[in-house]
Image (tube, rainbow, N blue to C red):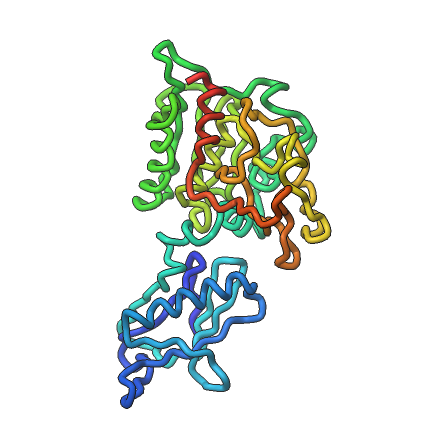
Length: 344
């Protein structure tokens, strides 16, 4: 038995001495048996099945659900980031790990929504004493502070320079791999072409973003004095739209579904919300900048955010079938609000 850490990737062991799966000589295909544990939600199961089936058209591999066979893949969700491969016959030899396409690290941000990624990363996060108080993915210095609007109580905007640009200094932790650095920097640079925001490496500036891999995904709302943490945990947070989401928090923006006027556009189904998570749906004073509600915002959570029973916690008004929370990057209204706030 091998317990392998992936980012919700299904790892398949192939091409190893004595561990390849049996081939059906008559059909010239190799059947790999699998079963998903009961803790895998129905929506997740359908995505896994789609990933497995994607091999059928391009290879001789066929994934078949197990009945009572000895050798099989046991797909489990252990703390959200593990896959258990059970009863494998390979002990020694070359092991080649092939990630199923729908769950590959590079593609997962196109499969899972921002809220799903953040909720998974933060679900079982155990934060150290020197980390801030975090509610959902928003950081506060204390629990009492969460009731204050940081942008009205202390000001939250980053200053504009004489050239009309808003320079936001940042430090990037050395723990990130080159691939992760590329994802994060691409997320930061995505603001360049659509706004006057410019992220620059910190030299000696007092206020800056300290981008680190702490416990979960989170950011403070707006600028804080003397530096502030923006956490992008390596296992679960380093994706393009997650970077944009947390950076927009740092620039002063709340979640879209928390807007003070949201009750005209969205209904909260509290009976489906996980007990203790109700505060994630509290309304706050938001920087709407004269724009209407945006179902396509990268700051909007999905229909199933914090659901206890795989039933919707958010339903559109007046159209309950309206889609939202599926953004893979900033929406046009996200960009408009940003530019209006900073007078770009």
